[in-house]
Length: 444
Image 1 (cartoon, rainbow, N blue to C red):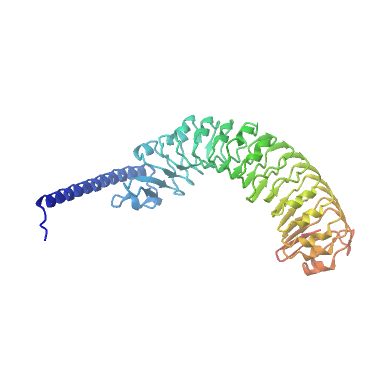
Image 2: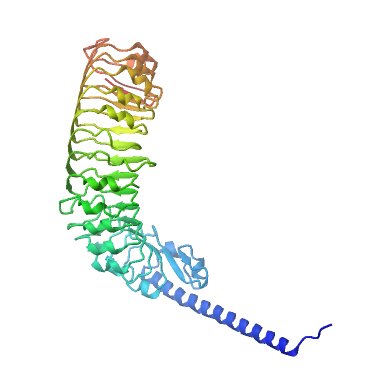
């Protein structure tokens, strides 16, 4: 039997002692760090007026156990603070990120917090910053470039004003940017188009912006953009041709602006595997509706524009279309039979146009249609019996047309006759049809 060396035993003892000493030192440092950050956070609680919503912050527990905080797994330093909807009314101290230098996430949304954006410029490690639905005021400073690690920035529903600085385009890590519903009364920079990683861009409800066109540079690098919301931004002019380069788009809302000219064809021809929503309503677009907008459109709203000419037969290629809203334009000609071939169409609103001719009898193919509005056109002839065979129809409006003949007797399967009235050109002879059966609404 081999005898254990005294030297080996001594070496092992020394190593064990060194390891234990280092472990105790690390534990001691972590404890000291936690105590220091707890003091900082308890002071923050006092500065915020000790709101009842964060009463769990106390001196007898670890900050890592407080539900509003996130700690790093190894050194237990605070890396995240979420004070969403805590009824906070006081200003956040500008020293917050100086005292908590490892902070990566800060959510202050849905409070009543005053102050300015400059209070957060010390937060150089922040990746997530949500200031939405508060009372922040003043400009966004050019120094915003200091927050170069930001991946998520939401300042929706505040009172920020002035220009959006060009330096915002230097936040190259951004995936999500929302500047919605503020009081910006200056300009917004083309550098917004520099975000090569951006997936969500929302700038809607900023109608105080200086009137501007959509610069072609805006769409230069936004190859990953999925969501574009520029509703009510005081935009004018046309849609740039290079809009077609945004091959990842799934939702586009440019509604309630003063955009004009024609709608460019092939806007989404590169978005092959995506379902796309397109909202261009309440603008000044004119000319023909292009038959080739994209192969995977799910919802299209062109209402309240100046579009004219017949609805193109090529619309039959929009086989994924579920909603088509084109009310209050100047479309003319017959309702194309091609529209009836769309297999999953649920909403069709063409009221307030100049459509003429008879209703297509092939509408029996609209098995999924729930809402049909063809009011205020120049349609004539009889109401086809097939309209009574639409199993999902819940809303039907054919009023203010020139329809004539007998009302299909099959309609009483949908609506009891005592509740129906009729225009003079339709028998029985009464003046107006407006009725409900269950959840169904019918107007003639």
